[in-house]
Amino acid sequence: MSLRCLLQIVLVLLWATVVRADDLDIGKMVQPVPVGARLVDSDWYIWCGAPMRTADGNYHLYFSRWPRRGGHNTWVTHSEIAYAVADGPLGPYRFVNVALPARGKEFWDGDCTHNPNVVQAGGRFLLYYMGNRGDGTYAVNRNNQRVGLAIADKPEGPWRRFDKPIVDISPEKTAFDSLCVTNPAAAVRPDGGILLIYKAVEIVEGKVMGGKVRYGAALADKPEGPYVKTPGRIFEAEGDNGKVWMLAEDPFVWYSTRYGNQYYAIARDVVGKFTGAAGGIALFQSEDGLNWKPAANPKVLGSQFAWADGTLSGTKLERPALLIKNGIPKVLFGAVDVNKPTTRAHSFNVHIPLETK
Image (cartoon, rainbow, N blue to C red; front, side, top):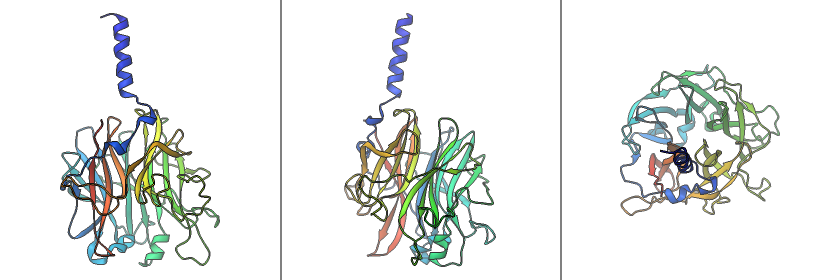
């Protein structure tokens, strides 16, 4: 074979594996969901869902759970991050252990662990999460939310936690993250460092639960930190000027060498500013992980999804996360609640298959 032919083959292979950023359209990949593609337990509320595939071909899922007997809002005092495994991406996922149990009032995350986000880096597993402690009331425990990290050599643990949060509130009362910080989403940067996106609430005098909900970013040269906050807020809507209480929520972030060497994020479009569907799922993109804009094809999902039996979910998807294989999104994971009629009577994680056209 001539050198020219070899070069042509290499160019074809490179073209097949690198796609323009504007070509990523996850919304077109969404397929009806097999009825069994869910993680549900009659005794536990299940929320969040951080999927991962390891080199051995096994599938892993970290999720939040808390007893149903206390009602949905007891997530803030009783949630724990659990771990499950499966032989295939759509499950069924089998419970293995509690990855991050409650560990006592002497620790900053002693009461509650929640919002898992898992990343593989340098042969280790990084589990980002929210933790809190408090007096057992919703407001106090909620306002004590902070962002933490646990590290393990194996997906099943044991996990090494830190004595302090990796991202804490800002001391300035006027800062957008002065009351609490939560919902971490991490990506490994091309230089090996970490980009961490986090949710925050600001202090508002006279309001126990604070004010607007916004997102910020922090950078670290290594997983252990330190995590240095960057100026400004992200996932802002053009023309909003701080009017809307919450624009985006629950981001999942990754860096893609396949789709234009860009950062991407999927997040809940709370009021429909980015997709036109309130409660839908939006796709964002960024060259540096700090300056974000809606992607060329921003709508991933509307306010509900389709089951394979022809019915609709009747409820929105929250806490979206992607299972990515060979650079291609393969499954969209998310939390779904069951309202009867107005309270969140139950919740589970659903696994939505994605098909590349």
